[in-house]
Image 1: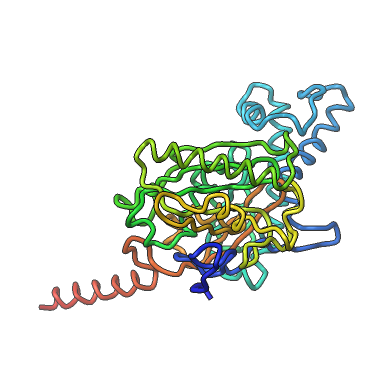
Image 2: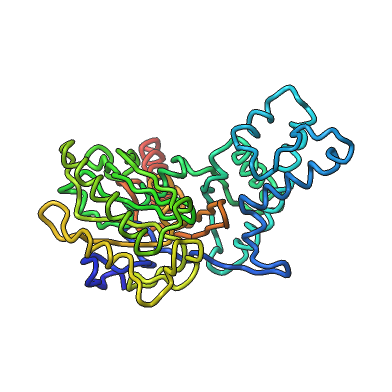
Length: 379
C-alpha cells in the first residue's frame, strides 16, 4: 500500500496510512455527542466562550476587569500577562476559564482514548495556535493531571516547535529518507482556513539523521481570508510563493530537493483529492475536478534538474509528524491540535530512529547486562 506510485508525485500516495517512520492509525476522527461534534468543545472558540461566561457575573456588577472588550478579541499575550499581573480578580477569571477548558479537553481526550484506534496511547502532544501561550500550556498540564487522577496513564506535552514551524517541519516525515542523502532542504506548505504558509525547511540530516534539528530556513505567510480569492487564484498565488522560495534557496546555495510536502485540512484521498473537511478554504476544494498536487506539478514541473514530486496529508497529521524524533520512547502516541477545530491523529512508530532502542529491546539488554554482572561476580 505504501509502495503505490502516483503519477502526479512519483513518490507514494497522498494521505497514506504508512509513512517512513510511522503507521497512522487514525486521523481527523469526528466523534459526536448530543451537542454536535465533540472536538468543538475543546477548540480555540470554545475557550473564548468559556472566558465570556466567567466574565458575565462581574459584568453584571460593573466590575468586569476587561471592560467592554470582546472576549474573542483579547489577545493571548494579554491573557498571559493577566495571569501574572496584579489584578487578582482578572487573573482569577482567566484561571477559572483555564480550569473549565481543561475539564472539557480532558473529556474529549478521554473519548478519544476509549476508541479502538486510540487504544494504548502512551503520549499525546498538543499543538495548534492555542498551545502557543502560557494559558494554553497551563490548560494542557491541568488536563494531564485530570486524566492521571482518573487512572489514564497517558502523558500530555505541548508540541516542541512553534505551531507555525511544526506544520512545515512535519512535512519532512512525508518524504522518503533517500531524498535527504543528496539534498539539505525541502519545500513545505501549511494550508489553513485563514492563512497559507510556505517555507524552506532545512533537514540538518548529516548532523542529526533523525531530523531532530530540522528548522525552517525561511517562510512566507499569506492571509488568504483577507483577500477572499477564488480557488484558482489561491493556487496561482501559492505557486508564485513557492517559486520565490525556490529562487531564494538557489541564491543561498541550498540543495533543495525536488519535493513539496503539503499539510491541508480534511480527509485526503490517495489520488490527492479532498474528500471532506476543506470547507474553510477559498472555493470548492472538495470538487472531484480539483487536485492541488496535480495543479502544483503543472505549475512547477521541475525543481532544479529533477521532476517535482508532491505529497499531501492532513494538517493535523503533518503537525504531529514534527514530533517523530522525540517520540521514540513510546510505541503509540497521538497529536491534538487546538485551533478553529480540534485536529487529531494517532501514530504507531514503525522503526527506531537514530539507533535508539525501543523499550522491549532496552529491557532485554538490561537483563543481559545483569546476567553478565552476576556471572562476573560469581567468577
